[in-house]
Image (cartoon, rainbow, N blue to C red):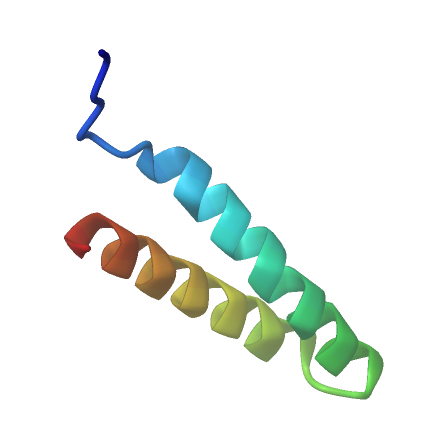
Length: 55
């Protein structure tokens, strides 16, 4: 049986960025600064990938 213990961090980053991007796009639509929204998306995606790699 194949047991791959190494997680694909790129796929995790893309999925986390897409999830955070949905919420960020809603916030930008409500009047938030787009650069702040992109920063929040980047930080939350990196945080999610870091947690995913640690767990």
